[in-house]
Length: 357
Image (tube, rainbow, N blue to C red; front, side, top):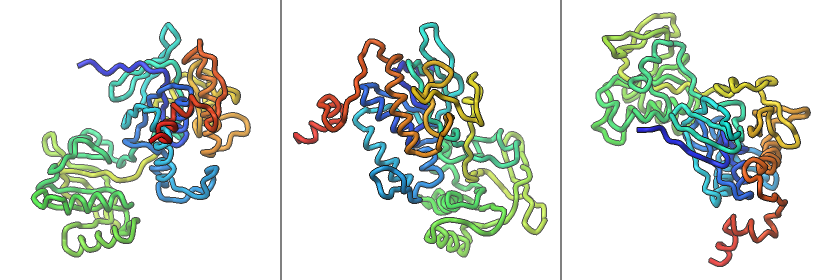
């Protein structure tokens, strides 16, 4: 089966707030965007690092949260029907003879686009891995990261499960493994491993953990992973060093890694442009990079006076959308229209339909 090939007027890398607002600004120019993000959902850094913490500096919004802002932006761009491509990382960008850009993702999808908007923030958020390289050979089979499609209902039945991590996501993973919706799918054991016997999370979640520990459904081990043991082609156990300095091993048929995430520039750093402190220099007139047709908005870009604020990214996305039209629709005269008064923008936004209904 051939890998998907998608031809687009515009591709946006990054589904954080600035990337989503880029979709909105392109939509006002009647450009439908495709959005690529390494995470399995929209929101970027806002959703990954502070979904429920208050944000006070969004204009006209006294207070919101990372989750609330993401939901509002998704609602705002809904009329433009952007195509979302989650859990994908752009690995290569090349220029075609006609000037368009060809992108390839780690999922094998190929995009050919007239303009590319990089709104990747501080980089793609990828799961932190244990400091045991040997475990990489078992990823997707016995070592699982969040949103691993290989881990289906019933996968842990009768298995020895080890959960690595100390935050709420690790606690929830351990609870879900130990107390599956279908009791018939219970594993043989669940061990929650963290460097110390202390966990972060909502009080209700931690209370459930304490109850599961008291009932013997979850064992907690304060330890550091040092290695693994293999039988044939399968992972058999993890070697650990306990807080007391004891070296031991624990049975492990499946390992759920919940060590948080870290931002990485990844392949973006190798696209052939000159970076300034791991940021992409841009023109403040167009927010185009040194590479024609590639625009950078939000925390990923750099220019004198740059401030890493969501508000700044919204401004940058607006100017980038105007500037990119010379590549997307060179024959079209681009006019400044106001959403307050423009009948055409009202039509695009579905305002007239809403009023009539």
